Image 1: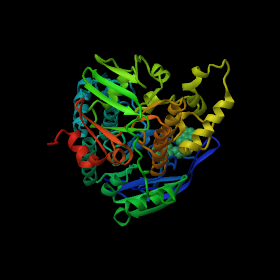
Image 2: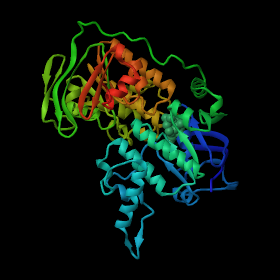
Image 3: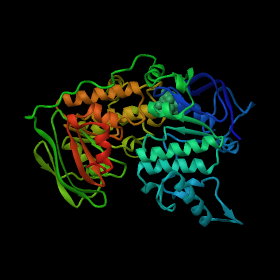
Image 4: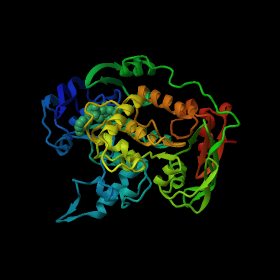
Length: 496
Ligand SMILES: Nc1ncnc2c1ncn2[C@@H]1O[C@H](COP(=O)(O)OP(=O)(O)OP(=O)(O)O)[C@@H](O)[C@H]1O
Ligand SMILES: [Mg+2]
């Protein structure tokens, strides 16, 4: 039932750029293997080769001892290999059911059997805990829901080897717990699982062994029980990465309020939300998926209609109808949906970086020198790892796309910075760099808002944390109240 796999000297080149340098290791049947490595190490690329989405330019892939050349994902699927994509691979304009059965449509005679597909899709949705009608269009879903559809789709392929590429990056704790229950069940049914994540606590709890990749090569493997989280972090980065967080320096009480929001109501999402962020302050936003955090800020920058509420920037009441107007007022919002809203995937890195300031600088020609300088700066500030500066955004690894998006949105030099899940999919080393950068933004006198689902991050980084539950502000926790227990109890409304 389970599949075993051996990679033998696997090489992958994109044009002149070599990203896998001869990878050698084996996946034993029926085990859960955690695949660790920094952003750009080659994890996703190697797994796309295994799942038939990419072809190796050298070396061999053996499945159950037999050499295979997959011409497409269908070939891999025929052997029972399925991949849950890191960057979702869904057709936005199709329904959930259509996506799940894409390429495997059920038919009755000559006709598509929509009823059967909707019924079966509903079953898979239930297994992953997504309570949405299977006929809903994917474009209407929020990111976490898209992730669950991706998982349901892989389940429908009845995989014997299932690759999960950072599946929990966008999920809430509840959804994550469900996913691990599902994973345990699949394992007990003999499915071989490759699990990719930058969340080392997940690696520790849910894998049998870990394989570490660095710079397109296999580095080492270990039984999970034999290594600590700190050792995992050091192995993947190749240097010591303790001390993730810098000491906090809260702003003085006299610091001016740079962002003031009051009475904000977004129909269906947020009710009567009010808060202030001062210069030099890092205010966190905690809450479960659906608590309204993203929707509140989408409304503040004009992406979502509101029925009531005022927004003031540096004491001036402002009317903002679009993210561009927000930027003109000095407020930048980096969306959690970097693929949908943050980056232009088919444009180059320089074009992405200079896009936001293009109109401000209003030059009638394309300033390639400025673009190059911007890219060099971004590489230095954000530790973007790339092999080809002329590539398009899509060909960066997931974590490096996130760093590029950060660089792009911070280039205009805003007074108020709102970062929605800024370290999603980012490796430990880069995470520490981003935390240091957020500290620097605050130290420069900006007001920073960090929306995050990682409690450790909120506690380690923020001066205060606002907790939303069901669209209402449940609490604002100060430095001495910032504990995981407090955050969870307010986020789930079980606080007494
Ligand atoms: N289509 C492509 N064209 C050119 N280069 C690519 C392409 N896809 C990936 N790369 C490059 O291959 C390298 C490995 O990327 P990959 O996505 O496999 O990394 P990863 O280990 O999954 O990283 P992350 O943790 O950020 O997801 C990166 O340098 C990336 O820029
Ligand atoms: Mg990846």
